[in-house]
View 1 (tube, one colour):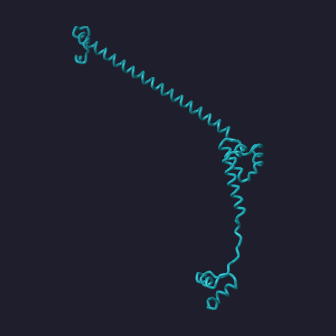
View 2 (cartoon, helix red, strand yellow):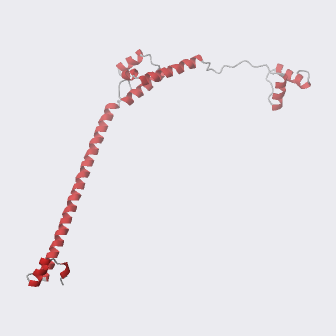
View 3 (cartoon, rainbow, N blue to C red):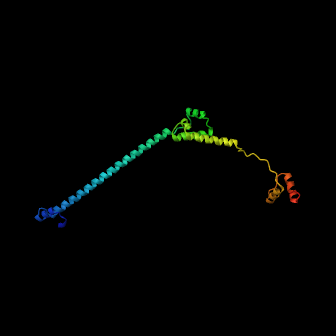
Length: 186
Protein backbone atom coordinates (compact mmCIF):
# COMPACT_ATOMS: atom_id res chain seq x y z
CA UNK A 1 0.00 0.00 0.00
CA UNK A 2 1.28 3.42 -0.92
CA UNK A 3 1.68 5.97 1.86
CA UNK A 4 0.02 9.10 0.51
CA UNK A 5 1.83 11.38 2.93
CA UNK A 6 5.22 10.42 1.52
CA UNK A 7 4.20 11.31 -2.03
CA UNK A 8 4.72 14.69 -3.62
CA UNK A 9 1.73 16.79 -4.81
CA UNK A 10 2.32 15.75 -8.42
CA UNK A 11 2.53 12.06 -7.45
CA UNK A 12 -0.65 12.35 -5.37
CA UNK A 13 -2.44 13.89 -8.35
CA UNK A 14 -1.22 11.08 -10.67
CA UNK A 15 -2.36 8.47 -8.14
CA UNK A 16 -5.78 9.99 -7.67
CA UNK A 17 -6.32 10.31 -11.44
CA UNK A 18 -5.19 6.71 -11.87
CA UNK A 19 -2.25 7.63 -14.09
CA UNK A 20 0.04 5.65 -11.79
CA UNK A 21 -0.61 2.57 -9.80
CA UNK A 22 0.99 1.30 -6.61
CA UNK A 23 3.23 -0.96 -8.67
CA UNK A 24 4.48 2.06 -10.62
CA UNK A 25 5.37 3.89 -7.42
CA UNK A 26 7.10 0.78 -5.99
CA UNK A 27 9.04 0.26 -9.22
CA UNK A 28 10.12 3.91 -9.23
CA UNK A 29 11.13 3.65 -5.58
CA UNK A 30 13.12 0.45 -6.16
CA UNK A 31 14.77 1.99 -9.23
CA UNK A 32 15.73 5.07 -7.18
CA UNK A 33 17.12 2.87 -4.39
CA UNK A 34 19.04 0.75 -6.91
CA UNK A 35 20.46 3.92 -8.46
CA UNK A 36 21.58 5.12 -5.02
CA UNK A 37 23.21 1.75 -4.30
CA UNK A 38 24.92 1.76 -7.69
CA UNK A 39 26.08 5.33 -7.17
CA UNK A 40 27.48 4.46 -3.71
CA UNK A 41 29.21 1.36 -5.13
CA UNK A 42 30.77 3.48 -7.88
CA UNK A 43 31.94 6.06 -5.29
CA UNK A 44 33.48 3.32 -3.13
CA UNK A 45 35.15 1.78 -6.18
CA UNK A 46 36.69 5.15 -7.10
CA UNK A 47 37.83 5.71 -3.50
CA UNK A 48 39.43 2.26 -3.40
CA UNK A 49 41.14 2.86 -6.75
CA UNK A 50 42.42 6.22 -5.51
CA UNK A 51 43.72 4.62 -2.29
CA UNK A 52 45.52 1.94 -4.32
CA UNK A 53 47.08 4.63 -6.52
CA UNK A 54 48.28 6.53 -3.46
CA UNK A 55 49.72 3.32 -2.03
CA UNK A 56 51.57 2.54 -5.26
CA UNK A 57 52.93 6.10 -5.44
CA UNK A 58 54.07 5.95 -1.81
CA UNK A 59 55.82 2.60 -2.31
CA UNK A 60 57.52 3.93 -5.44
CA UNK A 61 58.66 7.08 -3.59
CA UNK A 62 60.00 4.98 -0.70
CA UNK A 63 61.90 2.75 -3.11
CA UNK A 64 63.41 5.79 -4.84
CA UNK A 65 64.37 7.36 -1.52
CA UNK A 66 65.97 4.13 -0.38
CA UNK A 67 67.87 3.83 -3.65
CA UNK A 68 69.11 7.42 -3.34
CA UNK A 69 70.17 6.80 0.25
CA UNK A 70 72.12 3.70 -0.78
CA UNK A 71 73.83 5.66 -3.55
CA UNK A 72 74.78 8.45 -1.10
CA UNK A 73 76.09 5.91 1.41
CA UNK A 74 78.18 4.26 -1.30
CA UNK A 75 79.68 7.63 -2.20
CA UNK A 76 80.44 8.69 1.36
CA UNK A 77 81.57 5.37 2.80
CA UNK A 78 85.05 4.49 1.59
CA UNK A 79 85.60 0.88 0.64
CA UNK A 80 88.68 0.72 2.84
CA UNK A 81 89.95 2.72 5.77
CA UNK A 82 93.10 3.94 4.03
CA UNK A 83 94.04 7.55 3.40
CA UNK A 84 94.69 9.05 0.01
CA UNK A 85 98.14 10.34 -0.80
CA UNK A 86 96.98 13.93 -0.49
CA UNK A 87 95.47 13.17 2.93
CA UNK A 88 98.71 11.57 4.09
CA UNK A 89 100.70 14.53 2.83
CA UNK A 90 98.37 16.95 4.66
CA UNK A 91 98.75 14.96 7.90
CA UNK A 92 102.55 14.90 7.62
CA UNK A 93 102.72 18.63 6.86
CA UNK A 94 100.43 19.44 9.79
CA UNK A 95 102.64 17.33 12.09
CA UNK A 96 99.67 15.39 13.50
CA UNK A 97 100.39 12.90 16.28
CA UNK A 98 99.66 9.29 15.41
CA UNK A 99 96.94 8.94 18.04
CA UNK A 100 95.11 11.97 16.58
CA UNK A 101 94.88 10.68 13.00
CA UNK A 102 91.72 8.68 13.70
CA UNK A 103 90.10 11.77 15.23
CA UNK A 104 90.80 13.77 12.06
CA UNK A 105 89.62 10.94 9.78
CA UNK A 106 86.39 10.53 11.76
CA UNK A 107 85.64 14.25 11.56
CA UNK A 108 86.36 14.29 7.81
CA UNK A 109 84.09 11.28 7.27
CA UNK A 110 81.36 12.84 9.43
CA UNK A 111 81.40 16.11 7.49
CA UNK A 112 81.98 14.30 4.18
CA UNK A 113 85.11 16.34 3.42
CA UNK A 114 88.72 15.43 2.76
CA UNK A 115 91.24 15.10 5.58
CA UNK A 116 93.11 18.12 4.22
CA UNK A 117 89.93 20.22 4.45
CA UNK A 118 89.19 18.85 7.93
CA UNK A 119 92.63 19.94 9.11
CA UNK A 120 91.78 23.51 8.11
CA UNK A 121 88.58 23.67 10.20
CA UNK A 122 88.59 25.41 13.56
CA UNK A 123 86.97 22.42 15.25
CA UNK A 124 89.77 20.05 14.32
CA UNK A 125 92.41 22.68 15.09
CA UNK A 126 90.93 23.13 18.57
CA UNK A 127 90.77 19.40 19.24
CA UNK A 128 94.35 18.88 18.09
CA UNK A 129 95.70 21.79 20.14
CA UNK A 130 93.92 20.52 23.27
CA UNK A 131 95.29 17.01 22.79
CA UNK A 132 98.77 18.41 22.15
CA UNK A 133 98.54 20.46 25.35
CA UNK A 134 97.47 17.35 27.28
CA UNK A 135 100.47 15.44 25.94
CA UNK A 136 102.85 18.27 26.87
CA UNK A 137 101.38 18.44 30.38
CA UNK A 138 101.64 14.68 30.80
CA UNK A 139 105.28 14.71 29.69
CA UNK A 140 106.13 17.57 32.03
CA UNK A 141 104.41 15.95 35.01
CA UNK A 142 106.04 13.07 36.82
CA UNK A 143 103.63 10.37 35.77
CA UNK A 144 105.82 7.48 36.88
CA UNK A 145 105.25 5.70 40.12
CA UNK A 146 108.87 6.05 41.22
CA UNK A 147 109.59 5.02 44.78
CA UNK A 148 109.91 7.89 47.14
CA UNK A 149 112.40 7.90 49.97
CA UNK A 150 111.09 6.50 53.22
CA UNK A 151 110.35 8.92 56.00
CA UNK A 152 111.84 8.45 59.41
CA UNK A 153 109.11 7.70 61.83
CA UNK A 154 109.02 9.20 65.28
CA UNK A 155 108.97 6.83 68.28
CA UNK A 156 105.32 7.69 68.93
CA UNK A 157 104.44 6.84 65.30
CA UNK A 158 106.28 3.52 65.62
CA UNK A 159 104.28 2.70 68.77
CA UNK A 160 100.95 3.67 67.16
CA UNK A 161 101.67 1.57 64.07
CA UNK A 162 102.73 -1.41 66.25
CA UNK A 163 99.40 -1.19 68.12
CA UNK A 164 97.65 -1.37 64.73
CA UNK A 165 99.69 -4.42 63.76
CA UNK A 166 102.02 -2.61 61.35
CA UNK A 167 105.61 -3.45 62.22
CA UNK A 168 108.67 -1.74 60.73
CA UNK A 169 110.65 -3.45 57.97
CA UNK A 170 114.19 -2.50 58.90
CA UNK A 171 116.18 -3.71 61.89
CA UNK A 172 117.00 -0.14 62.84
CA UNK A 173 113.35 0.81 63.14
CA UNK A 174 112.62 -2.40 65.10
CA UNK A 175 115.30 -1.43 67.64
CA UNK A 176 113.78 2.05 67.91
CA UNK A 177 110.35 0.45 68.51
CA UNK A 178 111.76 -1.70 71.34
CA UNK A 179 113.48 1.28 72.95
CA UNK A 180 110.31 3.38 72.59
CA UNK A 181 108.28 0.57 74.14
CA UNK A 182 110.63 0.44 77.13
CA UNK A 183 110.28 4.17 77.43
CA UNK A 184 113.90 4.90 76.59
CA UNK A 185 113.01 6.90 73.44
CA UNK A 186 110.60 9.76 73.33
